[in-house]
Length: 429
View (spheres, rainbow, N blue to C red):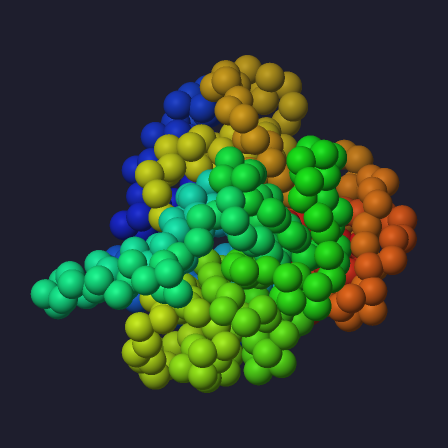
């Protein structure tokens, strides 16, 4: 009997890409693949930040009854944006495995999936390079007045004043850049900034710097120190109750006079009213903002000191790589486990690409530790508050989680206590 797989893509993550990768990698299996592409990004998704989404889900597209009909009878689902709420899962008794081609499974009710024995894997870091590159572009655009000059020329104006010594932007080799969130994206931004000979500070209370970054002079500091010392502050945490509105009146006031703010993560990290006041009052020199998740009704603030975009940082032509990663995961953790190890040995896998396992990691191999996490020893930083100044060391047990940020209450099920809310991290302790 063929294995039935439902592939729900969209106009960015095309279902054809997933099907091609799966059939190439799983040619020894008899497959019944049903495909559908949602109309995003031509039509907007439901964000679930400014207004509550379907059963608390975020960043999804599709009406529940239509999605259930597309998945009905399938044992495996591969998707990017399709929602799966508790009530929807109750209508899908055959579903046993879900692969999400995104960093965080915010469109899935993870607690309900665990209760029904459905394994969910995601792809942390799948677009980390694209976001990191976009971040460097945003830093250059705002610090070197590229955006201001471009906008003026489009209006037919020549901004000769941008040549003034008090308005010309600095070189990256002359400034300090502070990175908040040392996950997949934050680490890549650090790597790219090194080429500019930039002084780099990092704040993440749950992750320590790599040996390479320490050797290269990157310094891990408290949030208070980072804000006070950085000429550019770049945000890379996930949106959680801890990080929502973390850039507010207080933290903006703590930033260095004349600094720049870069947000290539999510809009809810920043209090836009407080930022507008900091820009118009002259405390900050400029900002480049991601407004994904702030809601369609958010005020359109106009400022010559700020640039905005609509969630573009992670979108580059890396779909085939992601499709390969998902196909590899479907083989190793979906089909192989359901059909048995003997048959799985006959599957011909394509050569693994760098970071393939990292792109599809999750807590669930045979070395599972307490409460479903792979226990490994690692030095962590314990803080009195999530982004507090107390960075005294404490050794703990870290787990590679089934999702990217288990600190969110509905993600509970990892060995509890802490969670890394950095970029596309997945460590809890």
